[in-house]
Length: 382
Image 1 (cartoon, helix red, strand yellow):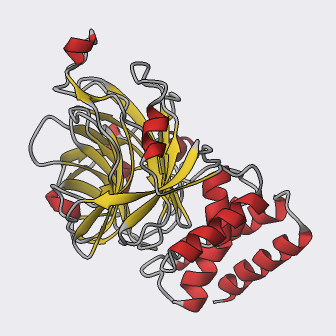
Image 2 (cartoon, rainbow, N blue to C red):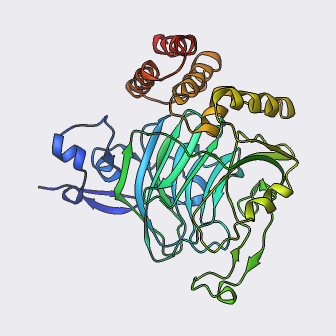
Image 3 (tube, rainbow, N blue to C red):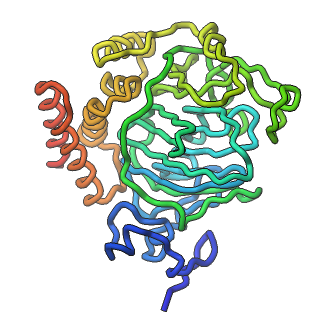
């Protein structure tokens, strides 16, 4: 007989589970490729962690570092949460907001109760359509995408190293995101390559209504005046898709600008953004050029924590550099700072072994490979 499990999302029947990996292989947790409904059935969904900003959320019992969530969303204001330690600390690695005039999909972080926008795009999502999202964190690289190919955001940040994961929605409104259609996954690669890397002034007070964000140009118009059949009060003709690179709260923000597919935007919109930049860096074509950009960024922003391999991977999107970035992340947070908390030993070991295997197969110099293999081996001994 199927069980009925009660929780913050109401009653869930175990025969409603549509979890291909688990039902096919008859696997038991811990494993990837399980729905959040399945985790609720085996008591691995927690009601004890208050989610960010009073959202109704389904969150894992266990904490994780590297992980991905794949899910479907519909309606207005839904989210994917990651590395959440309490109501004031964690990431919204998807903030799905179709009714927004200028930003439909945003990556936020909340640190000590202060909100910061880490990445954003404007593609005019429809409020009544369903969208599939893939969102993940690998080391210090956060990204999300819609697998249909309409977008990809990426950003580097180091504030939160571990915590619970899940999906959420506001208490009010018609948002829809379903635990039975939300899978816990292993992350994948690679990232997209940016069109430009610039430094801009910031604006915002750090509140939920006015988060810290880059001060980018806007040209807000009524869609109907432009002959566009969009159910939005305004659109921004100068919108761009952007992601911050390890921003730490100074007077400026380092951002990478990416291309997206909103056809109505002026092809010169990137020139408008670049015109207000204090500095502009040529997008690198190899690791050496990326390291030079990192040196300049570090010189201008001494508080920036991101290492050269993290910045190189973020700017190049080269999956061969990714294991070096991840090894740096785990060595720094496990050996040097002891910051990763609450992650089950089996999960941490499995993650480290996965990246050790990736690093052994990476097409990089033997010197660089050996250096970072030694870092992962040191982490595995802890």
